[in-house]
Length: 210
Image (cartoon, rainbow, N blue to C red):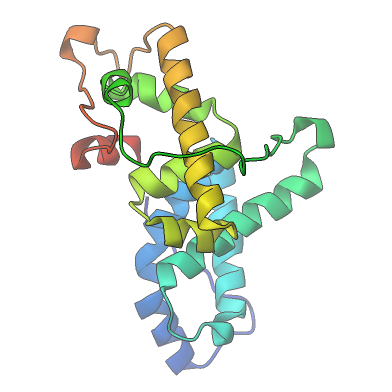
């Protein structure tokens, strides 16, 4: 979704703005996609992205040529959790579980492949029901195709924790898909719905989920 990149009242010089436009703005859609799945609300997602872009521009001098997408997505994520902490009561926040004890096999199991063979609408609804901490790793891994190292940088977690949390998120997603009734998406019946045939989402389904 296209969003105009905002600039604060005190604008940087023309060279900095041009560099910001060239390096950061191309990842605006990825920023909105992450914000959308974290907030589950279009208006809130746009607010998060606007604030994140302001912060990114404000601190652009601290960016020294690393991965601009990872840098921006980390700002989007931090903006979401900062604003949520100000407005959400403690009881409404998603609990973070200790992931350190879970051993992870990163390869997709036959069960995973079978359970993810569902229509896009059902997958959207199931993903939206997951806690934010699990939604974000799934979105970053499956929709934005980030590596474990990139996700670790964005979420400020160890790679082992990322892999463990991703395994938990996939397991919860499988439970949601198994125990919830099918979800009609855009009026399509099961016979005419698209299907996902592997643990990694195809480009067509990735586009539908965005």
